[in-house]
Structure formats: C-alpha cells, structure tokens
Image 1: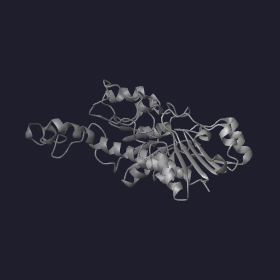
Image 2: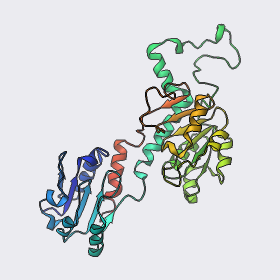
Image 3: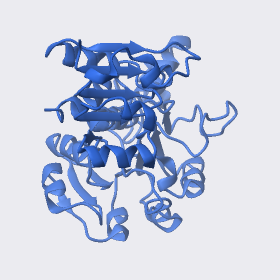
Image 4: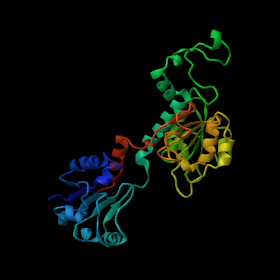
Length: 338
C-alpha cells in the first residue's frame, strides 16, 4: 500500500490549476502515491476519501478538509502539507495532535513561487508603456494613421513626429537604459525587477525599510533610505510590495504628487499600497503615465476613465498566474519533504 497520500479539492484547482498535478508527478517519480481528486460538491474529508490512512507517512491536502479524526486515524504520519487556495486549512486541535506526534508540517515560507512571474510581467508592462505597444497594436487594427510618420505639414521640425517614431514625448519613453528607475520594495518581486532594469542599463534605486541588505545587492542598484528622496527624481516608479496593514497606503498622496511630470508608474502587486485617488487624479490630468495589472476597483468598470487612455496600459490582474508559477508553488513545497 502507498505511504504517500494526496487529496485535492476543486476549490484548490480553481486557484492553482496546474500545481497539484505537478506535485503528483514529482512524488510519482519517487514511488507509489494514492492520489485523490474530489469532484465538485464532494465535501468528504481526507479521512473519508482515502483508502488506507493507517499506512500514510506523507500527506498533502490541497483544499480538502482535514479533521482531528482524520489525523488520529493516521498513526504513522511523519510529514504533511495542509494547504488551501491561499493558506493552511486545519484547526488548532488538529495542530496540537500533530505537535504531540512530532509530525513535520511544511508551508510556503514566502511568495517566491510567483516572484519571477510577476517581476517579468512588470518588466513587460514597463516596456509596453515606454513604447506604447498596446495602444499601437489596437490602433493599426482599424486605422492606417499610425503608419504615417510624416511631421505636420510634411516638414521636419524639432520635437515633431518623425519616421518610425511612435512614442509620446510627454511621458517617459524609449529605452529602460539610462532611465532613473525607483522601486518601493526589495523582496521577491522588487529585487528581481530591479535586477532586470539594472541589467538593461537603468539607474536603479530601491527603498524598503523591511528588507535586509542582501535583497538590495541582488537588485544591482543602490539602497535609498528615504521614500521622499526616492520619488523626487523618478522617471519610472514601481511600488512592488505586498498589501498588508503595514503597507496599505505606504505611498501617500504627497509621494505621488512629488513624482516628476511625465513619470511612468508601474503597478503589479497591489494598487492600494498607493493613494490611488492621487494616482488617478494625476494620470487623468496627463501628468503621469500608468502601466497597471492591479487596480483600486476590480474588475474595472467598462466606463472607468482610466480605460483606453493613451497614457495607460492596463491588464486584468493576471501577473502572478503562469504554469511556471504553479510548478514553482508545488516544487517549493515538495522539496521540503525528506
């Protein structure tokens, strides 16, 4: 009989649709696994769904209910993961039993599993906004005007439209190389984004009062000690911290108002780390450009004034979900087992 047991609830698959099967493949390479995927509406616990609890030494529950009685019926259990869609899913009584039996329980120690996915997406949004790629793509579907690079009146003028020039000079545009990139956050996402921009030749500075120095070293830029100095000369401003009580509104209206005119703001973690009313006001006044995957209102209403603007690139909050992030989610848990 198998000593490894996995039980997956469809609610988990709805959030991480590739993670459970990848975890299963990793374990199958080591030996036999009892793998159970519950059907929608199936409310059975792990103990009710599995066939041979008494043999289980390793358990992974992905969204499936785990009770005290389930664990009591698993006397040989040595290692376990109890993971719902976004966190652990077992109660204090069950936790105490595991402690008494010396069962090792594993969890994600950080959100590094989607760090690469989100940071690359942030880089892509930055590039798209600098060159107006989404706007031009949309325009050429219905209009030939974007192909006409002639300056007004057909006479070349300094600062006017020219051949193969589609950028908006009123906002930060062109290359990342040489730009002053200013980042709030030096964690899983911010440090990766910083390293990408540094590699492309940007002048990178980051502010993060919670991150240790090695996080800044990874980014390849310099550590800024004051947020008010960080925003003062930004050409590209990227707040990249998770939304917690300590970070909600950490970028205040005063900080947003201090951003230089024409600055590009990149949002890929959570919008409410910023004073979004101030962001909206300056974007709608054509003082800032915005490239965002996260918003203060989700989904954005179809009549939201931020949609369809020439100084806004917008996507529907999907930066963190790739097949690769699903796989990393599984791998970072599976690696902790003996």
